[in-house]
Amino acid sequence: MAVTNDIPWLTDDEQRMWRRWLGLNAELLATLNREMQSDTGLSNPDYQVLAVLSESTEGHMRVSELAASLQWERSRVSHHAARMEKRDLVSRRGCPEDGRGAFIRITETGRAAIEQAAPGHVRAVRRLVFDVLTAEEVAQLDEIFHRLRTRVGLTTE
Image 1: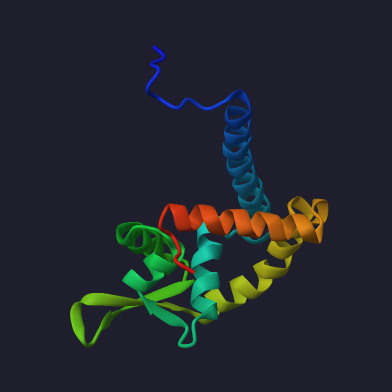
Image 2 (image 1 turned 180 degrees about the vertical axis):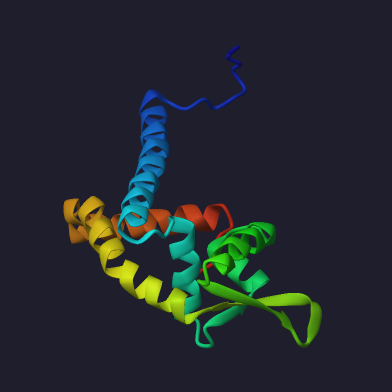
């Protein structure tokens, strides 16, 4: 690759940190996914959908709201919900106010699945992330992640 002087290339330290971040993100998600599928048969995306739905007051959300909560495209939510619906984890029904809109609802099977999966998921996250960090480091990472999310427009808090 040709290096030009008008590009602020990453320093060696920045490049190392960036590649570690990418590797950590990929491996952490892969490890969590492997463990959850082995323990419960749920994938990480299944767990994310069920967690958001189980925490909503009504137990259901519009596809667009669910997509925003998960930071997914609406089409991804629709396709994934269709696969989950075949396993009776969620159900989909039309929105009475909007003929084109749809609600995704957690089913009793889905609620039982998230209740079964949650303790193992929390243990894995604690083991892989929080057990090796001090409270101060957690607070520092929280602040850093907040600033980065604000920078890319994911939050304005």
